[in-house]
Each structure stands twice: as C-alpha cells, then as structure tokens.
Image (cartoon, rainbow, N blue to C red; front, side, top):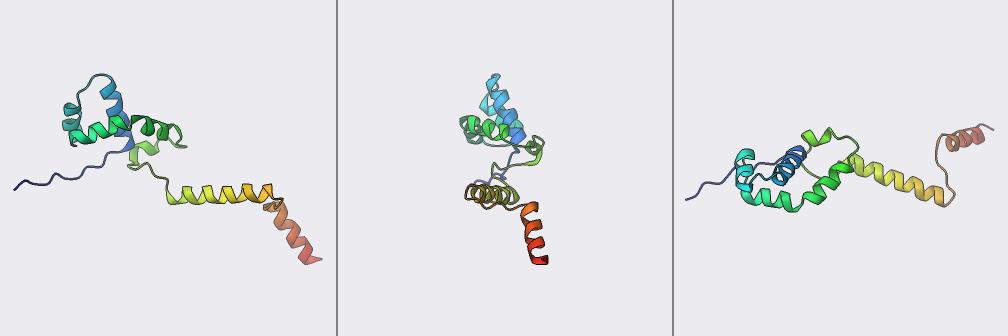
Length: 111
C-alpha cells in the first residue's frame, strides 16, 4: 500500500521563484524536490505562469506574495469592489452619496 504525500501549498512568492528558476534552466524534477511538491505541480505552475505574474502585477501590496497562497481576493476586497461599483452607478444616475449629501440631509431635518 502506498503512502499519501502530504499536501504542500506554495506561496505566490514561491511560485514566482519557481517560474524564474525554470526560465533560467532549472529542471522540473529538481524544483519539485527543492520545494517538496510533485513534478505535476511544477508543470502546472509553469503552464499558469502568465496568469500568476499578471495577478502579482495587479496586487496593491507586493508584500502579500510572501504570505498569500491563493490567487483569490480577500472577502473585504470583494466588498470594497461592490461598494465602489455601487457608488459609481449611483453617480451615473445622479445620486451622489458622500459627506455633503449627509450634511444636506441633516440641515434639512434641522430646519
């Protein structure tokens, strides 16, 4: 009976390093041994190199690559995107919500 290999999840920084090392001529097998993953994982990283690098270019904080392991947005980032989209849509239709809007509402109630 074969033993299962422990699941290793690499950080974005490690994936970038793998991409750079593979471009410089390092073999997939050597990289797999170095990072403790399978050769198919290295192949997947090389195959998805463009999307990984594009994701890193779009990050606001490049230090996130040191700890972040998934290329999904944090829930707070998704909420901020939804709020911003709503704000833009409201402005397109003439509804401006901001400090001046609330001051106007307060002044109208006080009168």
